[in-house]
Image 1 (cartoon, helix red, strand yellow):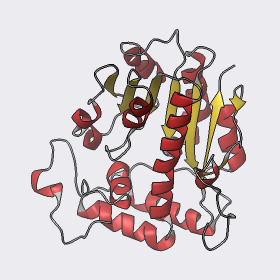
Image 2 (image 1 turned 90 degrees about the vertical axis):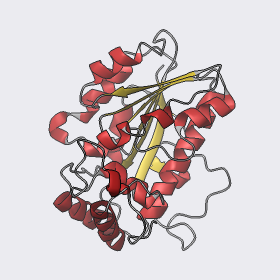
Image 3 (image 1 turned 180 degrees about the horizontal axis):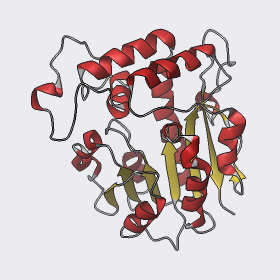
Length: 277
């Protein structure tokens, strides 16, 4: 974590950003140890940490899952196109870095509608000479806009991996997130993949309290969903083993400790990868 007394980017606040209002991308950046956050973000981040002490572990586990999933898809499955929606502030091992380390010709499109992330977009646009990256300013609630813009870089006649990490929880039930995901996947050919991570309910009281604190302080509310509700996002797809599981349990690089033990606490954040057949 950053020290609250340390220098903050608030000295030069980009136009259109209100540093007094907590922002999900900046709070996530704080949990990952970044410096692109403000006092309000650190305050709500610390309050959430008190309710859910492993939230830092969760943030790092989500980033590690991204790395494992992208390496697997680019390597074993030969995927060369990735659509990463809800990108967040750039940090280590972004999707294009991982994918192009396996396949330099990989093409990646990022999509986000956060002004904070927009100010860092140039960092996402650094591609290998053989491949390509692009950035779309768009909201997940408008999948058609995302698809139309992404088609300028990606070839939808070839398989695409859609990455939706820690973003669907910010889409409330009234916006029908399952239909949004279905629309994205309907536009893609067979052999495409869906990669999801999502905060879970019914797993820990600490997560429920952390979500309550977040929703009291943030304009963008979070919705927890049960593992069964998260699994519904993969309806019509072939769900890869080991299915919808806690973040550290998805194809770990080394044998994972028993969940719930001291060395492997319960991580109330689930993930999965599905293939369009």
